[in-house]
Amino acid sequence: MMSSEKRHSTRVEAGFEAYVTVDDVVIPVATRNLSLKGALLEGCDDCLVGTKAELHIPLSPSVRIVADGDVIRAGNGVIAMRFREMDELSFTFLHRLVTLNASDPEVVDDELMEIFEKF
Image (cartoon, rainbow, N blue to C red; front, side):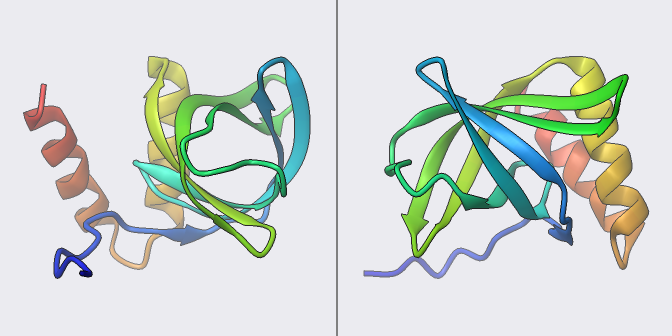
């Protein structure tokens, strides 16, 4: 039975070359979209639901987003990854990237407050 709960995170289109690391194996991927809570990635055909992975998104030679997460959907060469944790600097870059590309940046800040309220 499908849940009637809707996603509460703003997703922005993002075509970054990135890679995931699964058990010390580096797999090139491309981001399709990003949110504060996760990413949709092309590639990683061998990543199964439940796989724990580390996502690296190089934004420049000195700036990158690094997040630990879980594959929550997989199929047709696309995986959805839910972030479990990332360092403060990576989260700052991710928040900025999503905010700058969102159609309604204020909604992203509301989502950020929802994340903080859980802690």
